[in-house]
Length: 102
Image 1 (cartoon, rainbow, N blue to C red):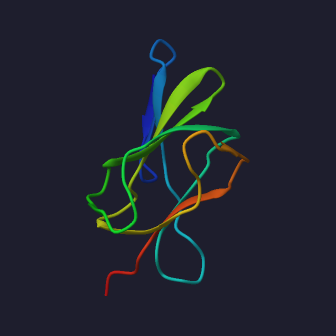
Image 2 (spheres, one colour):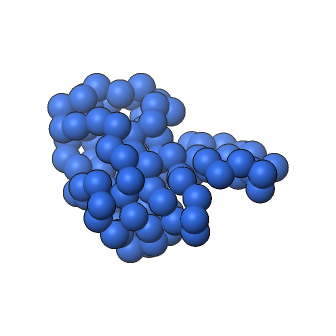
Image 3 (cartoon, one colour):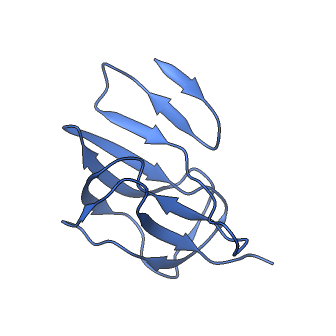
């Protein structure tokens, strides 16, 4: 098992669910979730306007025959969701944008 915190990254060879860190979007001051690898969106756990807490599951991506839980990088509100269940996404694709909290 490998665990360290950029925001969140947990890998476990014996477990099929992995959690990955989220990177902030450049320029806007807000945050976004980007795909850590190419895959298929299998679950959306939020909708636009939903308030989330840091670490809260937002989306599940299936890649490499495993489910990868993507978590909120910060406390905030979901501004926009760029992928739907069943969509195939590329590595580093924008998936979710959070509104700026001032």
